[in-house]
Image (tube, rainbow, N blue to C red; front, side, top):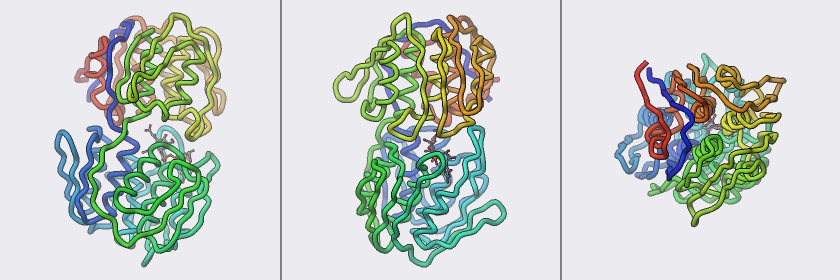
Length: 420
Ligand code: EPZ
């Protein structure tokens, strides 16, 4: 196992480049199961999660060749069983369910289970595929599902906590090869869904409205191969903005999509951080000495993303005054509180919210990464803290941030990756 050692207190400056989007890449890779032709995908971030998805595709019959610039996927899906060993390590792999049903007419996919950020049920996925005529059940920890030919249908996919990103993705992919028209009402509007829709369209799918709450898909008999470049990761870009804000830095974030990040940028502007567009692809952020605290409530897109809640909390922890942070998407996503408090933060939990009393300074300490975004919050805290922070179990970070230590070194952070 490896750890990050951070010597805090360095002001970040310079340029940092955002990688391809992890959460857009995972369903896009799954969508390649829908065709027998060759797909070439560029700008795929080399992360533990994207590599796990490649392994899963191989186990389902695809040939996957990984080179430094692209991933080439060929061959045909010929196995309908997505094994527990792979699916249990990453929830994103549950989105092979839709494509397997569309291509093979049956699927046996391990239940992803709960995880550290909450219970994470799959009822909306099941509701969506059953509307398309799929018969399904649960056995031995697996979802067993089958249908001779999927039939388009109208469905409502809203749940207690709003829309579901991966349930929308599963239904879109299944419906792309279904007979007739599918209408998804209360679909997820996340940029990752918009990108999946663009990818499916490039494969020849007839799809409209992706990126809005109403997606209409007219099934086709066959999809083609495609050569496609993934867009940039809005959560990685947002994490870089929050790192600069917390260290009073002045950086340019290259390849950031401004339109995907309005909730965060608006919040940063309101607390005294300057974020401006530079050209069409970059953002410049300058953070002043004194910031104001501000509350956030996470919501599905275009609201403030749950995937930036922990990182924003790290910033509020060092912003004197009180702020209230509420997670409406994953109300239990607060494992980072205890670790931030080990560094001197004053945060307490009150059901689905955290009350943060900002302090002047955090102090370096040994801390434990619990999940991907919680780990990023600890990196932010470590960069801003006085003294040395050791973050253990950084394999969580490697699931979602490509070469984070190398990127941070380029903008003046003092970070090293060391063996435990
Ligand atoms: C995606 O997970 C992302 N993962 C998550 O990113 C992200 O936090 C989440 O969307 C919300 O934006 C990937 O894209 C691989 P949801 P997903 O279904 O699709 C409830 C990260 O850090 N729900 O949109 O699994 C659910 O419990 C990760 O990169 C149901 O009730 O999330 C939650 O409260 C972690 N029934 C809400 O919906 C269901 O069947 C939204 O979850 C499915 C979900």
